[in-house]
Image 1 (spheres, rainbow, N blue to C red):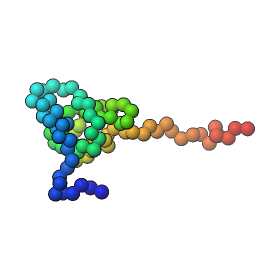
Image 2: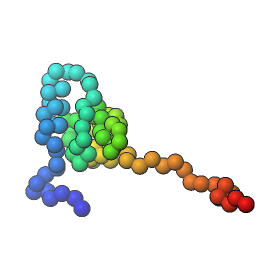
Image 3: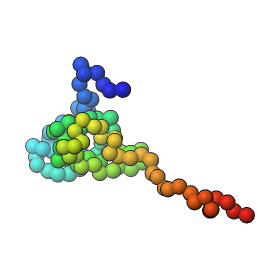
Image 4: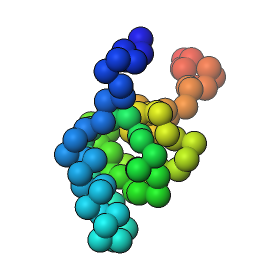
Length: 92
């Protein structure tokens, strides 16, 4: 379910202020964040975020195509290790 249009997109204030500060100074350090629910706004384009996935931080570089999506969508929380071989499962 999407957020009400009346409320607008959810953007973490503290994170937004950090991005503004970084763009004014011109530095390109990654910004560490736990705000996975934060919506990517056009001001975030060109910034690198280190988004927490529950265990570690994953680097996410924001591009124009990501605007409107959430930061957590690009930091996977599950690790797929592949399916088992049917012949390996049967042991006599």
